[in-house]
Amino acid sequence: MSDDQHITAPLRLFNSLTRTIEPFAPIEDGHARIYSCGPTVYNYAHLGNLRAYVFTDTLRRTLLWKGLSVTHIINITDVGHLTSDADAGDDKMEAAARASAQSIWDIAAHYTQAFKQNIADLNILSPSEWTVATDYVPQMIEFAQKIAPTHCYELDSGLYFDSSSVPAYGALAGGRDDAAHARIDPVAGKRNASDFAIWRKSPPGEQRQMEWDSPWGKGAPGWHLECSVMSLARLGHPFDIHTGGIDHREIHHPNEIAQNQAYCGCTDAEPGFTGARWWMHNNFLVDRSGKMSKSKGGFTTLFSLIDAGVHPLAYRLLCLGAHYRSELEFSAEGVAAALTRLKRLVMGVEGLKARAEGVTWQSPRLDYLRANLHPKLVPLLEQFDAAIADDLMTPRALPLLEEAIAIKKIPVDEKLCLIAAFDAALGLNLMTLGRADLRLQPKDAVITPDAIEAELERRAAARADKDFALSDEIRDALIAQGVDVMDGDPLRWDWRLTLAQGS
Image (tube, rainbow, N blue to C red):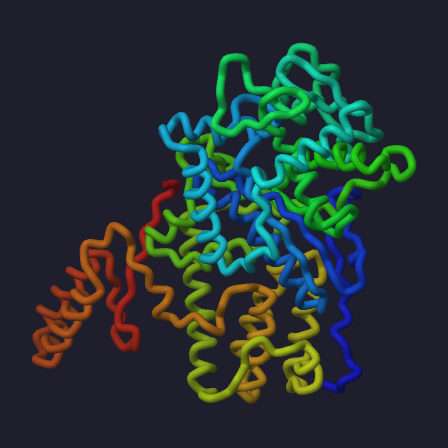
């Protein structure tokens, strides 16, 4: 492939604002700025929450694939998010602190660290910066002071944003309906059902663990205010892309947009201004009983999958196997199939690496691929680029990775360079993982790996002595303890995967 040839598929992304797929070009040439709604750190993230970050990481990796530099912000919400996403109920952090009789700061620290561990386990690139809500409260008060005279009114419970004060409020959600309004807690004195709290006053006689002085009394910021302030502070307005789960499209993100419009004074002069040029949303992860949610009481976390012996990148692969805008069903069978598919990918790459000892393949530049790729691999490169450039169509890209591994009569170093490039976009860590790394011990295993190896040595001796009855007895005993014996396989054994729905 000559130097003047290019990977030319234009990057096209679905914009929730317009409900269409549009060609993407960053505001600043060569540099994309992304803000992602982060977790509220009152509990462990469930797998549905984490799907949003696999999606955003895929977006970021695709932008990098296309040669852009990326500034990516993820926030940590440690105050202000209420027990209903629709601006109702108690602060989730305060409620968790009371329930556990712990300091709210300790709870925030614990679950923040747990979330960052999930991000690392899923091979999600760390953001350019984590922004923590409580670090920005002074800026939130300043923001609220600026918009209050024209767009807000005060009630006994706090400062509220008048949603009728900005044009086309709720356009991101496609217009509000009765169901959306029903999710919003009625507050005596609110002018409109869709009005929302900018600042929530602490109730008389009640002292919260997290509260600040403000012109409207002691209290805490509203959840919607936090993201407007942190995105403005770290990325400026406008920036390129704002991401989140599809549930944010109905209330949280329209409220952010309204605040952004009020703050910049763009409500009349620039009615199309929303803070971000693109708003992108991933769909739900569902189990057979409906959307996965912490509110059900029991929920499946990445930690629970790992405890069951599932490598976390199997969940990443499960997510990549569906388009981010499609609902994805979660099931034990689906996770097991994803783990099997991951094992096959790892085994294929491991075999290639064994044949290419001493060859450097990590992070090849695309200009290198363009200049040096074997002609037989060029169509795969072009098809892969077209797939991920088509609104992150990873279900089309994954089979191309598998085809690249399997294709015959190609120099192994060239195959590995192409595979490494594909993996840089998909994030499965194939160039580092070995098959043995996927062999995670289930938490409830009653036998240790050392004991398994000892039993296999005893079985080998029995087979050498032609004592096949004893050999079968040892094999059956291992199976009963959750171990698959793999005769003729260099790995020799693996844990037998048994998954129960939920955690």
